[in-house]
Image 1 (cartoon, rainbow, N blue to C red):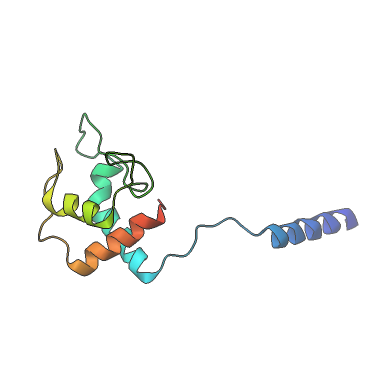
Image 2: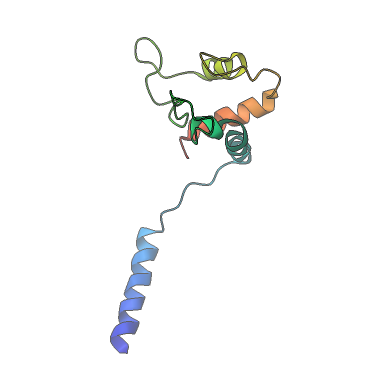
Length: 114
């Protein structure tokens, strides 16, 4: 019984030193952006609910991957322009995002979190 107690105490201490892995907290703006992503973007860009043969790309790394000529990542203005004007098979979402909502979506995408 004493060995179980010592082992339990050691495990708790070890967790206290190393911490528990959890996702970083989102700011209120990022949380709003996550909500917008879930209700307006994820059905195509994650779930492919429409069964598109060419699956739309995951947007969570849009600011980290090379998406432009010369290997540069996208900018906020470029991502916002594609969302609002559409591109290829992606329709325009003009009039469906306020400036504040677009800023929130961009803030969330900058986190790279899924």
